[in-house]
Length: 182
Image (cartoon, rainbow, N blue to C red; front, side, top):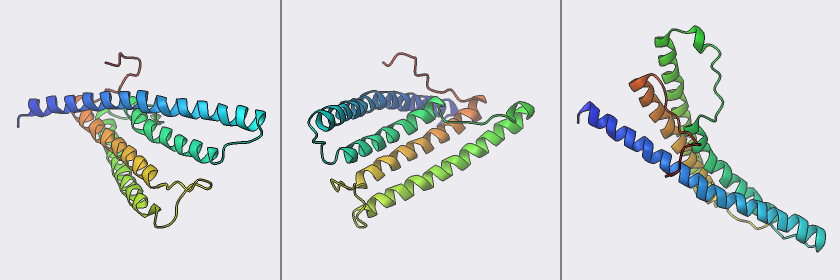
Protein backbone atom coordinates (compact mmCIF):
# COMPACT_ATOMS: atom_id res chain seq x y z
CA UNK A 1 0.00 0.00 0.00
CA UNK A 2 1.43 3.35 -0.95
CA UNK A 3 2.09 6.03 1.62
CA UNK A 4 -0.35 8.48 0.02
CA UNK A 5 -3.12 5.88 -0.04
CA UNK A 6 -2.50 5.10 3.63
CA UNK A 7 -2.48 8.82 4.45
CA UNK A 8 -5.73 9.32 2.58
CA UNK A 9 -7.32 6.37 4.44
CA UNK A 10 -6.15 7.79 7.79
CA UNK A 11 -7.62 11.21 6.98
CA UNK A 12 -10.91 9.57 6.00
CA UNK A 13 -10.84 7.61 9.28
CA UNK A 14 -10.25 10.79 11.27
CA UNK A 15 -13.08 12.54 9.42
CA UNK A 16 -15.42 9.59 10.07
CA UNK A 17 -14.46 9.59 13.76
CA UNK A 18 -15.13 13.33 13.96
CA UNK A 19 -18.52 12.90 12.30
CA UNK A 20 -19.41 10.03 14.68
CA UNK A 21 -18.33 11.96 17.78
CA UNK A 22 -20.26 15.09 16.76
CA UNK A 23 -23.50 13.24 16.14
CA UNK A 24 -23.16 10.99 19.19
CA UNK A 25 -22.61 14.01 21.41
CA UNK A 26 -25.43 15.93 19.77
CA UNK A 27 -28.06 13.20 19.82
CA UNK A 28 -27.17 10.98 22.79
CA UNK A 29 -25.69 13.76 24.89
CA UNK A 30 -28.59 16.06 24.12
CA UNK A 31 -31.14 13.39 24.96
CA UNK A 32 -29.36 12.57 28.21
CA UNK A 33 -29.11 16.23 29.18
CA UNK A 34 -32.79 16.78 28.35
CA UNK A 35 -33.72 13.77 30.49
CA UNK A 36 -31.57 14.97 33.40
CA UNK A 37 -33.00 18.48 33.31
CA UNK A 38 -36.62 17.44 32.90
CA UNK A 39 -36.43 14.65 35.44
CA UNK A 40 -34.67 16.86 38.01
CA UNK A 41 -37.29 19.59 37.64
CA UNK A 42 -40.12 17.07 37.80
CA UNK A 43 -38.71 15.25 40.82
CA UNK A 44 -37.58 18.24 42.88
CA UNK A 45 -40.13 20.94 42.08
CA UNK A 46 -43.27 18.96 41.43
CA UNK A 47 -43.00 15.64 43.23
CA UNK A 48 -40.90 16.68 46.24
CA UNK A 49 -41.93 20.30 46.87
CA UNK A 50 -45.52 20.41 45.58
CA UNK A 51 -46.73 16.87 46.31
CA UNK A 52 -44.29 15.87 49.07
CA UNK A 53 -43.75 12.50 47.35
CA UNK A 54 -40.32 12.32 45.70
CA UNK A 55 -39.74 9.65 43.08
CA UNK A 56 -38.04 6.59 44.53
CA UNK A 57 -34.72 6.00 42.83
CA UNK A 58 -34.55 9.41 41.17
CA UNK A 59 -31.01 9.92 42.45
CA UNK A 60 -30.01 6.57 40.94
CA UNK A 61 -31.32 7.53 37.52
CA UNK A 62 -29.68 10.95 37.65
CA UNK A 63 -26.37 9.39 38.72
CA UNK A 64 -26.45 6.94 35.82
CA UNK A 65 -27.40 9.73 33.41
CA UNK A 66 -24.43 11.75 34.68
CA UNK A 67 -22.10 8.78 34.11
CA UNK A 68 -23.49 8.54 30.58
CA UNK A 69 -22.82 12.26 29.99
CA UNK A 70 -19.24 11.88 31.20
CA UNK A 71 -18.69 8.82 29.01
CA UNK A 72 -20.02 10.67 25.96
CA UNK A 73 -17.90 13.74 26.62
CA UNK A 74 -14.51 12.04 27.10
CA UNK A 75 -13.72 11.17 23.46
CA UNK A 76 -15.27 14.38 22.10
CA UNK A 77 -13.22 16.41 24.57
CA UNK A 78 -10.10 14.53 23.49
CA UNK A 79 -10.75 15.24 19.83
CA UNK A 80 -11.51 18.94 20.35
CA UNK A 81 -8.53 19.53 22.64
CA UNK A 82 -10.70 20.33 25.65
CA UNK A 83 -8.51 18.36 28.06
CA UNK A 84 -5.85 20.24 29.98
CA UNK A 85 -2.35 20.35 28.51
CA UNK A 86 0.48 22.16 30.23
CA UNK A 87 2.77 23.52 27.54
CA UNK A 88 4.95 25.77 29.66
CA UNK A 89 8.24 24.21 28.52
CA UNK A 90 7.36 23.76 24.85
CA UNK A 91 8.42 27.28 23.71
CA UNK A 92 11.91 26.76 25.15
CA UNK A 93 12.39 23.36 23.45
CA UNK A 94 13.82 22.72 20.04
CA UNK A 95 11.21 21.75 17.45
CA UNK A 96 12.58 18.22 17.16
CA UNK A 97 12.62 17.66 20.93
CA UNK A 98 9.11 19.12 21.29
CA UNK A 99 7.82 16.82 18.55
CA UNK A 100 9.30 13.65 20.04
CA UNK A 101 8.38 14.55 23.61
CA UNK A 102 4.78 15.07 22.46
CA UNK A 103 4.85 11.70 20.68
CA UNK A 104 6.29 10.04 23.80
CA UNK A 105 3.70 11.59 26.12
CA UNK A 106 0.80 10.74 23.80
CA UNK A 107 2.13 7.16 23.45
CA UNK A 108 2.34 6.86 27.23
CA UNK A 109 -1.18 8.27 27.54
CA UNK A 110 -2.57 5.90 24.90
CA UNK A 111 -0.95 2.95 26.70
CA UNK A 112 -2.40 4.01 30.05
CA UNK A 113 -5.83 4.59 28.54
CA UNK A 114 -5.70 1.22 26.78
CA UNK A 115 -4.96 -0.44 30.11
CA UNK A 116 -7.71 1.56 31.83
CA UNK A 117 -10.23 0.64 29.12
CA UNK A 118 -9.32 -3.03 29.46
CA UNK A 119 -9.71 -2.86 33.28
CA UNK A 120 -13.06 -1.08 32.98
CA UNK A 121 -14.28 -3.75 30.57
CA UNK A 122 -13.13 -6.43 33.02
CA UNK A 123 -14.84 -4.60 35.92
CA UNK A 124 -18.04 -4.50 33.88
CA UNK A 125 -17.91 -8.26 33.51
CA UNK A 126 -17.52 -8.64 37.27
CA UNK A 127 -20.04 -5.96 38.34
CA UNK A 128 -23.00 -8.33 38.60
CA UNK A 129 -20.92 -10.95 40.39
CA UNK A 130 -19.88 -8.47 43.07
CA UNK A 131 -23.29 -6.82 43.34
CA UNK A 132 -22.26 -3.40 42.06
CA UNK A 133 -25.62 -1.70 41.71
CA UNK A 134 -27.30 1.60 42.47
CA UNK A 135 -28.55 2.03 46.02
CA UNK A 136 -32.31 2.21 45.61
CA UNK A 137 -33.28 0.64 42.29
CA UNK A 138 -30.44 -1.93 42.22
CA UNK A 139 -29.58 -1.17 38.59
CA UNK A 140 -26.35 -2.96 37.70
CA UNK A 141 -23.33 -0.82 36.87
CA UNK A 142 -22.24 -3.38 34.25
CA UNK A 143 -23.41 -1.53 31.09
CA UNK A 144 -22.00 1.73 32.44
CA UNK A 145 -18.59 0.15 32.98
CA UNK A 146 -18.74 -1.03 29.37
CA UNK A 147 -19.77 2.44 28.19
CA UNK A 148 -16.89 4.05 30.07
CA UNK A 149 -14.52 1.40 28.71
CA UNK A 150 -15.50 2.10 25.11
CA UNK A 151 -15.23 5.83 25.77
CA UNK A 152 -11.72 5.50 27.20
CA UNK A 153 -10.64 3.23 24.34
CA UNK A 154 -11.89 5.81 21.81
CA UNK A 155 -9.81 8.39 23.69
CA UNK A 156 -6.78 6.08 23.28
CA UNK A 157 -7.56 5.82 19.56
CA UNK A 158 -7.70 9.63 19.35
CA UNK A 159 -4.23 9.81 20.90
CA UNK A 160 -2.90 7.28 18.38
CA UNK A 161 -4.39 9.35 15.56
CA UNK A 162 -2.82 12.47 17.10
CA UNK A 163 0.57 10.73 17.04
CA UNK A 164 0.09 9.91 13.37
CA UNK A 165 -0.81 13.54 12.64
CA UNK A 166 2.27 14.79 14.50
CA UNK A 167 4.47 12.43 12.51
CA UNK A 168 2.90 13.63 9.25
CA UNK A 169 2.61 17.37 9.72
CA UNK A 170 4.18 18.38 13.07
CA UNK A 171 0.76 19.38 14.46
CA UNK A 172 -2.62 17.95 15.39
CA UNK A 173 -5.68 19.16 13.50
CA UNK A 174 -8.34 19.14 16.17
CA UNK A 175 -12.07 18.96 15.67
CA UNK A 176 -13.65 22.41 15.61
CA UNK A 177 -17.06 22.43 17.27
CA UNK A 178 -18.18 25.65 15.58
CA UNK A 179 -18.05 24.04 12.14
CA UNK A 180 -21.15 22.87 10.34
CA UNK A 181 -22.41 19.46 11.47
CA UNK A 182 -23.04 17.85 8.11
